[in-house]
Image (cartoon, rainbow, N blue to C red; front, top):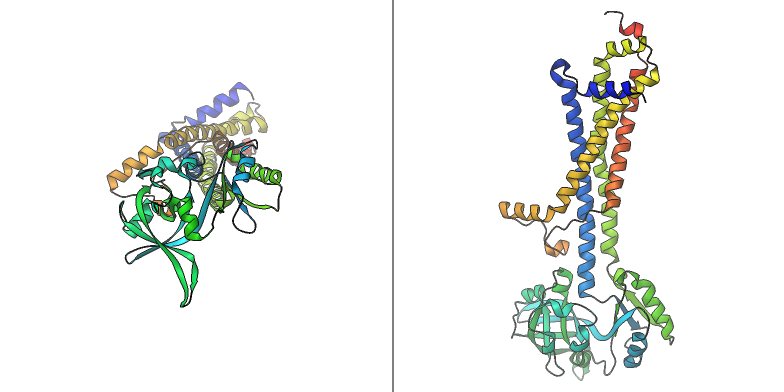
Length: 415
């Protein structure tokens, strides 16, 4: 590319002919591309932030992996616990008893998981102890029949600390008069607020011995919950641990399997949003076609003069390609900067907008969180900018090719 091709191309973009209409159209093309790129980056950042926040909240309140017996309860769980703790990559292994129950408080009923835990060991496996907003895990003592309810579950039952609720086990007890459901009164000694509606609405904690008596498990437990050094390697680690234990076999799950639908839906939504919002970028990019066609139409005489002075079709093509590339580059760079800036401050901006409008955009019962996190990933920014710039470069092909095909004699015939 010669210096004069760059000089002429940039001069045409600054054209003041016809009151600067061409320059105005070029500016509108840059603005449209900037908004399209920024919108796409913000949306992808919100999806990234939502995924990261969901992952961190899940890992904060749930175990990384779970090991259960194929035939039901684990009777000799203490020996298994010691073996698991000696495995590499395992930080803790704690027993638990869990079953789905119906909780009743007067006429209010709600189904939830009742999990029996050992308070002194539970702190090493999950962060539930830090999520207790009223009371403490230490209030769960053997024989006290005390329970800590999720905040949303307590609200649905209209239960407060100090009230008693009835736990109805799914299995019944055979009596001469028929099968009678097993029920037991539990005193509410605390509340849990994890920030995730799934746990706040569907979980109640009690002492493991009390839960074992309610579910008639004797000395057995439902399984062992593991805390791992690297939660992202949970599928491979828990499988390796189960194989090392030998025995008749175990049923293993991990947090990626238990919440696979969440992350799969996020990935699908992210891909679909990228394709859909890319249409905005495409529309903005192809506005460059209209801009360059107008410039080519207006500069027909100038192109003809350049051709008569010795400029070849390639030189003319490069002259107008420079203009499209500059518009695309300016719009892409500005869009990347604006999108990154908005994504980094999105949470505070949305909070301010909610306060002004007096509404809440995210319902925790639907989205599992009430704020709008955003996390900008360099890979996403590069991908968006690369696709946007490629579309802009593609949009310059036709106008530049049309300019290169200008016949000097035809253009100068009426001059």
